[in-house]
Each structure stands twice: as C-alpha cells, then as structure tokens.
Amino acid sequence: MKAATDFISFLAASFSRHRCFSSSPPSALSSSLPWISPLRLSKAALPKPDPPPEATTASVERKRKYISHESAINLIKRERDPQHALEIFNMVEEQNGFNHNCATYATILDKLARSKKFQAVDAVLLQMTYETCKFHEGIFLNLMKHFSKCSMHERVLEMFCTIQTVVREKPSLKAISTCLNLLVESKQIDLTQKFLLHLRKRLKFKPNTCIFNILVKHHCKNKDLELALQVVNEMKSSRISYPNLITYSTLMGGLCESGRLKEAIELFEEMVSKDQVLPDALTYNVLINGFCHAGKLDRARKILVFMRNNGCNPTIFNYSTLMNGFCKESRLLEAMEVFDEMKSFGLKPDTVSYTTLINCFCRAGKIDEATKLLEEMKERECRADTVTFNVLLGGLCREGRFEEALGMLEKLPRDGVYLNKASYRIVLNFLCQKGELSKAMELLFLMLGRRFLPHSLLQMSCWFALARLDWQLMQLQRCLDWWIWGLSQNLNHGFICWN
Image (spheres, rainbow, N blue to C red):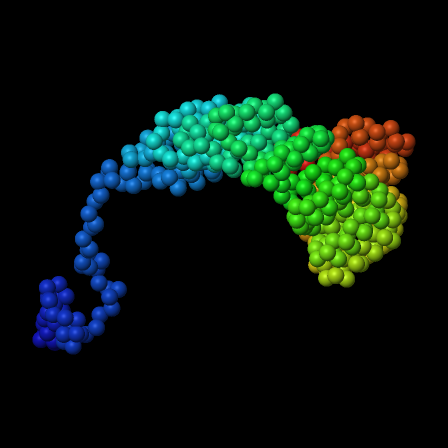
C-alpha cells in the first residue's frame, strides 16, 4: 500500500516538472502524460505578451487634436451657431502647419452670410487680403447673391469690384452677368448704369449677347419697350453680340404683356425669315400665353397647330398654358379637348395639367367630374400635390359638401398625403361663413391635435359672435382654452404652423 502511494506521488512530481520546465513539444507531452483540461491551468502560469511601446504624450495629443481642411469644412458646415463656426475657423488656424485655403474661406463666408453676420464677413474678407493662397471668384459670386437677398445692392457692386483685388484676375463673363442680372432683377437702375460705366472705363469690356439679353429683360420688365428695341438694334449692328433666340423671346414676351400682339408676331416673322433663327417650344409658348391673356384663345390654338405643322412638337408646358387659358374663360369643353389631344399625341399629363382641369371643374360646380380626374391621376401614377387637394377641398365646400371635405382632412394624412395649414383653413373659413359651428369645432379639435392653429384670435371672436346657444358657447370656450394651452406648450418647440 505504501509502495503504491509513493509511486503516485512520483508521477505527480514528474508531471509537475514537465509542466513548468519542459521544453518538449506538445506532441511529446501528450504521448507520455495523460491529458489535463486547460481550465485547470493557472492563469499565472500562462506567458504574458510583451507590452506595446508607450507613445509619448506629445504625439498622442498631436494626433488627437489635429484637424485637416476637409474636417474643418465639415465642422463649420454642421455648426448651427455662426459664432461657434467662426471660433472653429480661428481655432484650426492655430495648428502647426495649417493655413486656410479657398475652400475653408468659402465655407465660413457662406455660413456667416446666411446668418446675416455681415460685420464678421467684412473681417474675414479683410483677412483674405493678407493670405497668399489662390482664391476663386465663386466666393464673391455667392456673397453677391446673399447681399442681393438682403437688399444690400451697393454691396453687390462692391463684391464685384473686390474680385480683381483679392483673386488678382479680371472678373470673368460669369461674374459680370451675375452682377448685372442681380442689379437688373432688383430694379437698381442707377447702380446698373454705374456698373456698365465701370465695365467700359476700368475693364475695357465690350458687352456680348449675354449681357445685352440681360438689358433687354431689364427694359421689358420696366415696360420700357422702346429702349429694349434700341438695345436689340444696337446688337444687330455688332458682330460679337448678334441677337439670339433668347433675345427675341424676351422681347416678344414684353410686347405680349403690353398687349402689342401684332408687333410680337411681326418680330417672330422677322426672326424666322431674316435672321433665320428657329423658334423652340418656349418661344411659341410666349405667343400662346400672350394671346390667352388677351382673351384670343382661338388664335392661341392656331399657334399650337402652326408649331406642330412646322416641325416643333408641342410640350406639356404648351398644352397646359392653352388649357389654363380656356379654363379662365370657363370654356370647359375646349379645355377638355386640348387635354385629350395632349394624351392622344403620347404626352403624359403632369400634376399641373390635372390640377388646372380639376380647378376648372370645381369652379363650374362639377365636383364629381373633378373627383374622377383625381382617381385618374392615381391610375396613371401621377401624384397629386397639396395644391390639387386644396383646390378640391375648396370646390367641395363651395357646394356645401362639408362632410366629404372633413372626411378628406381626416383620411388623407393617414394615407401619407401631406396637407398644409391652408388645407384646414380653407374648410374652416367656409364652415364659419355658413354658420356650421358644430363642424367647425370638430375641425378645430382635429387641427389642434395635428399641431395646426387657426388664423388669429380675431377669427375666434367671430365664432363667439355666431354662437347663440349656451352649449355652443361652452364648447367654443373649451376650444379657445385648448388652443391657448397648445400655443403655450408647443410654440417654443417648432411644432406650431403659424401664419
């Protein structure tokens, strides 16, 4: 018994020596010793890997804090606060080896201009004059548009003059046309003349067709058609700025708007016969629209036939213009004929075409026909927009079909159709006018539940004047309390649609 015990002790000691000191491969051990589960092995006995070399604190900090130009641009774009965006712009410049380029300057200037921080814009522009990097004039074209939107028209001209100083190149034709177009659209006649004088004296610039076209548009908008004709005649005397299709179309549009249809047709014939400029669908549409506005719809229809016979296929735009003219004159049958003709030539009516006809049917009191057109839109996979539904809601209310209108307001949002505040207010106004107070209260509850508010407290007071029964007055008071509560709870959270 003692011999057996000594033998077992000897085996255990031998295994222990093999586990701790033996350099034999696993196969040798497994052949000479019984298998033992690795779960029994002590973790302390497992060899520890060598630790990685420690990085210095300076290198880690440099890798973590360095911001590239692309990252700086993204940070500035995502920042909503313009002050914080400017702080980011200044912070990245303090990095070793970092210098702002054209892209970072363009990003911060766009951010500041959108937020109307023009004093900060001036400071950044001043800093740009000390930079050595290459700038592009696109920065200043963007600033021109922002200044024009804010009615700072003199700054538009100032930005144009700054191009040559900062970019160190003469402004391109695109810069000239952009500045001139912004001044013309804003009807800044004095600044426009000052700008043209600057082009001739300082830049020795000779206007081309694009520049002349902007001037023609300017005069047509101001009803100065004689000046517009003078500009066109000056273009004809020049070799580098001869009138093109845009020139003639703009001038014809001005003549049509002034009711000078005969002169517009004569100009059209001159364009085709003398100058051999072929009209396109937009040019024909100028004439169609002009005759429609003048009430000469039969002549407008003949122009549509003429353009097809002369190899210019009418577009949906041409047919929609003619349909709109017939609808305004309440000539529903002719409008439907144009609509059917458009489909017969393989053109797929768009949302505008359908909405024009639906509005015509609604104005004529033919709501069922308008509803059928809406169903046809769904079958043809033509998506109706908010304007389409608002037109139909107004038509239903004019015919006193309030239940159907309320049903549409209740159902459409659940079907994924977007309705705006005008959708609800159209029905609400008709209900108030007809004294349908109970239905008006139902709609008011629906509006408040969907975060829409009525026009004002004045409209609410009108409802109180219409209320004659106590229970109606109580219900209206509840609606008013709910409305005020909703205003106080949600006005600061961006949920309220307010006029």
